[in-house]
Length: 516
Image (cartoon, rainbow, N blue to C red; front, side, top):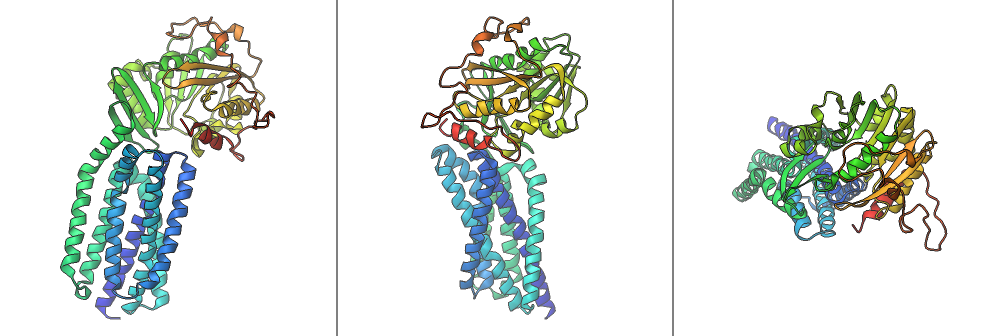
């Protein structure tokens, strides 16, 4: 093999590795987009991987028909990957905003299949070209596949630790597409003597590159305008963190926080939620010196806890440091939580709540579970028998646990499954629900090592909503929301605890909230 052919073969291997990096980034990007737009991360990543691999299989099959003009074919494929992949995230937000539910799923899954097919076309073409220039077929296949697989690992790590946290979903798609175009133009230059219509390919590649650079510069701003249509109120803050997509909206004084598209609170009525979450268990706990808050990175539960002078230490465990930083530094959010993170009693830990409880030492007098609903696998483990057993093991003998447990009206089976799961640890439970206008009817489960007597509840701190006289009414459930659940034949349904081995809560949650 001549020196010139050796250079070309090495560039083919490099090209295969780089496009593999781009391919895997697009694959995990589509999974992340599906999780954010459509929900249920496990489902979306499963469908993404399945569709992408199916597309690669289709592409490999179609590659049998590409036996001539291999470099031209590769360049055209890269142009297509760059154009479709680059604009994929941007257009998905547009489809979601203007065409609504259903259309976004069809668009995303079609895009995954197309990019997967194009990716499946790349490698066989590169292998044939490496063989054509004098590399033995067994060596060319092995080396190209090595470059592909190694590139896949690098791509996954780059997306996880660089692209998503630093650039967000929309800009990442454009940046990765630019890499595809640069590889195509590099290969075009390497094999320029073999290419007919070289100028046409160069102009086409340059034009697509120009569009993608424009996407990097302005695409995120335009996608932001698409996203604005999804929310009722003007967006005043948006951030993609390592763990979630944070949005703050505000309209006529109503500040709202959304995490991954799910409403967390409205400033117009959040006090109803947080007063119930905090003051009922705090009223019953004996003593109430050491408090643990799981979640609550907005600082609103901490605000209510500041009303108790006998509290000595409050530990808040929230996974995302960016959420806590926002709660501290955003003037409007800090005003709402009354700068609760400045309280010297508060100690913040940035760790997964399950991991924290596994390694926790000592006992807590009150544990407040202020976590998002169990709409994905990561959150589901925080609603399992195993997790609640950890809470029980770190609860002081006279202590209380209060768990936000979604809506007993909209997600009746979910609410009572959470209650059944907590009861499965051997703790006693009491059920509460109330109307929160921005959420609807919302439920909580109170748990303790000893029987709970609600007549002992005495709300003696300053509140806007909760009062001692109101408490008994919060424990009354209507026939369509109580724990007596029947199937279509009128037979009572036995709810089973949610466990790590048998996670039955996610499916119930998805089915319950599908129409809301």
